[in-house]
Length: 395
Image (cartoon, rainbow, N blue to C red; front, side, top):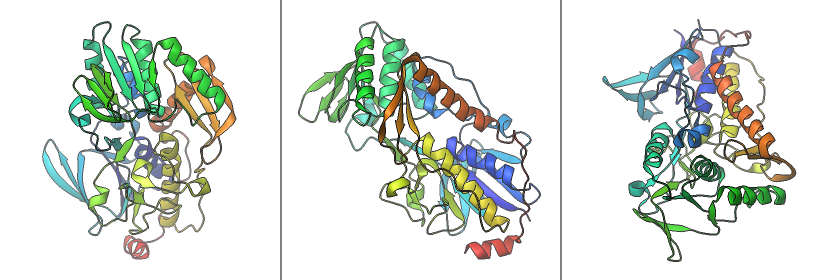
């Protein structure tokens, strides 16, 4: 019997892991199934573009994995039984359950409301394609002079507010940031960011904490009202709740706790990658939720799984570190902030059109890598242990 590897989620991390496993393992020995609710790979880093009316290229998973030996299963994951090694699924035809020998958990995250009243009822987000399309429809309905408030001064908020302001210069666009505007960037990058906001006409409220979202805007912690016909919520992400409902060891955030190979510390047959996992990066700091973290985590997990199944003692170590932060500020401007391994700003950076091109190259390259999982042939190793022996060793 072939060793069954089930990958949950086809975002950047899950899709990368499935493709890399198909490179590493002989298909006569390993059955690789990737489970995803959407038929397409979704470029999450481009959701601000989708929300402002830009059309993105479709990337069907069936085409991506054609000829690789990876089976695509379109379904929602409703539960994981880590002790029985089964996954419960639901699709248009009903419910089902599949068993696994090795599980790669990559269900990712969604927008976090942080318990702020009114967010679920009145705010929009760009955490995924359905919500980005919902915002797209709403923005298209706005007449000139309408007000839009983006809440959150992180990377997602900065990209969203500048994209909206550039695409719809007829709107009154505002940003509310809990801290200073881009205050994690170096001084030159912060100055450039302020200049872009000024050029695009974005009103910035710094050191502003939103306490409530209403149909007519938002109310700050100190009682001020910021009027808006549309509120876009970009204050961070929360992981899918399924892992926390299992017997897997999870952190307070609900993320699965993993070792340096992305293997669960409580269930050795389970690996977790991307936003779903909490892994240690340089300096002992947890890797942040991002594509920049998820892809190398997937490389590490896939290589570790393949090495262990094929009886190899050593395997490559993925670069679990940071090199830069890429921020698009509309289609024609941006910031590339070079950072230390543990994600602290360095003095060097790129700005303007060159930075915009760099960011586009990075986004396109990430999607290209997903779409070409078996482009470069490599030697696939045979699984040396029998299925029973492998499971016993994992236990």
